Length: 418
Image (cartoon, rainbow, N blue to C red; front, side, top):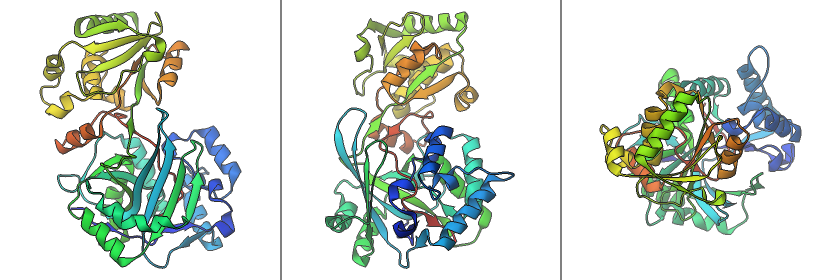
């Protein structure tokens, strides 16, 4: 059962820091060094200074000092009363469609993964968790939210929150992807009670933020006892929300010696129907049938469509997995081609040893055209239902199986842990 609670949020005071656009940032794991520098140049209060800290000898100590000083200066102020925060994101997806995603920020009690509580959907890596744990110890706050899904076919929770959105938002900012983020504070007891009732029996599925959730599990146990450290900042979105979309993340591979190239070519000839397609048509259409992939290699530069000849091939390669996993594109690709033909290990995949990812088709194609990578596998989007079914089977998808868009902005709200 989900224990959803309002929070006494810590948030920026625009009268001190200036426009919100100067202090918010994308998620830490998509920011490179040049982007970090550009964000810092916008404002000395930009959240990236804390979320991706730098400083000698201990960057996390620098983060602690900054976060504390911002509160002392009044740049960050804490709400006196707890509230939920209705959140609207107006965006244009990579496919060009204009949509609005509806969700809300809250605190959720940290539970072990399991049926009826919280479920992950992707495998995680140890490195980012250690980084986030050290940051949490230093700041004693959730700097960024976990994005999770829950089932609410009748949209009861949103109906309780939506009246607040008739007025002007308390926070309104447009990011670099032209996504507009709006927030409304909802403190009415009857609205909070209705949301809690609508989510009381919900199982939460982490869409983005596995490392942050697992970090907070470790932190809560480290601190021990009861208190605010037993809750984590989340943005919850209903699986049935019409603005919820999932896009694919494509695979690119490099370091292929001639024998591995030949092993891959042999596996493709044996297990897939192969058809040449126009370059602009390399992305396979969305669907739930046997695995389809776009494919291109740096030698021939011929855009191809690969279609698995028989689902029985995937069933045999993944015989120890659930029905849902055996029909998962990323899982079948990993079993038949990345591990099967190319001999990659879980360790290789976890540490990007020869394998990397591209957010859109054009990026994947350019990475191969430049010769930086040898081949690209262009994926179909993973349906939300598949994410749910694999998680319900108690299994985790391969890394980067999903790309939930748009991302949440960091810096809209913070959740103090003490």
